[in-house]
Image (cartoon, rainbow over all chains, first blue to last red; front, side):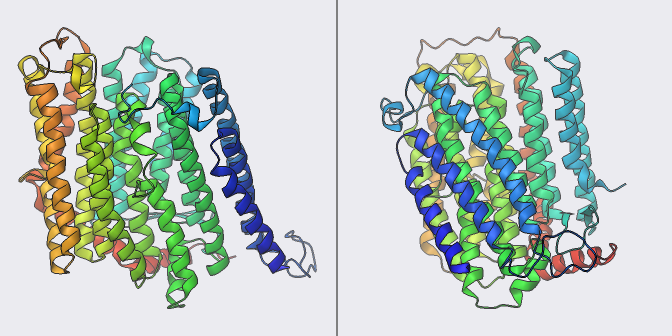
Length: 117
Length: 500
């Protein structure tokens, strides 16, 4: 099970990296969505094997509990990731409104060596 | 009363209240200014306390050590808190002087307070995941500040900044997860104890390398710096000063904290790597500065070049080098922020910060020129100004350990810094085009200059009172270098909390 999780995380990371390196900013956005999911999966896998463990709730006579801390961390990370994704979508929309493109090659084509406004 | 949480709570509450009050008014401005002064006073109180050997700790929610978040303020944290409140106050006052209430963007002050809360939390926290959260608060506020007042040119410069920081945060999240998997805790002190029980473990080294990448992005280390020099010049002047002064230095602070207090001290690969990258950063960034032709562009590249000096000192990895690093951070934050503010005042007088269209400032506004000269020469490292002492000790340590190439690189970078500063001086102050007009009647620039004069006085004080500042930096460096003492204090404190 650990191996499968590791392979899955690796594949998602690879996909995210591929998308992040694209020139279209919309693809970069999707790359970020994938990347944050890959990171969340990685965090989840840090709570160890869930076999023969029960959900972390205090019940009389319950067996060993699954480690709840990574789940709390993921919850925080999901909320932050959600907010940042929403921000990125709006930022891209603003760039699109101003420049009619979200392609890096077209956006920065006329950028000379000196970025004076 | 536990004062540990005050540097985070005050800006957070101020920001929320400012948001609730609504559109900018004179009263809201006063409220924020009073809050910034009280932040500075709290930070000064923490500084005096920690300088006399006290530690300020808070176990949030009284959770036991392995799981709960601890806030720890030691001397280094207190120094950084004082600097961030000082620069925050200067930025706020300068912003007031620069534009009237009616021109102020309604979100600027609330976002600025959120940024302060994030910066202060990253100095106070003793927990790796909490550090991640602090970074996120700081970054999200900075995204907001970078884009709310942006025009259509600025907005496309913001995307690379946001994109690389988002990726950096995600990598930080991965690093925090891996640290939890490896050590079963996220607390700096407990990580330090457990890491010292597994000497030579490759996984610790890998985790350290991952953290260096994350903090290197934050600090703007070669080759991870390209987001900075194009995005910072698009910010309004007071915000540019705050970003330039504080944000990259948060990266330097966490490098000190992580390498000194959390990770074992035998990761020589990381230390040599940092020193090497720092050398390259210094040279490449200062060449970038020379290539630019507008004040804020030049200054933005200088931030990176100076980061090179600080990280070089971290890479030498001796208490003396770290003393120089902390001294350099203190000097750099004040000088860099005030240079951005001087640049803003000069650009206001000339209506442009393009060096081809500036000039004649020395005849019309000599005091602004004097301030610029003090800070520019200090940045380049001329004795007896504050920049000299830090560089001097870094060079001494480098020579003592035989890093001749890196020392040569740092001296070359200093000379090139001087060259690019003289470029600003010649074009904007001393000579420049005769066609440049100086709007000396502008009512704002005098008050702006007063704010800068305050900062310049502090930086001159650092230069002339270098001995006492150096003693303070040495105490802070020895404290942050001593991981066992940190672990002992935090463990001793957590032992007093109620058990599971």
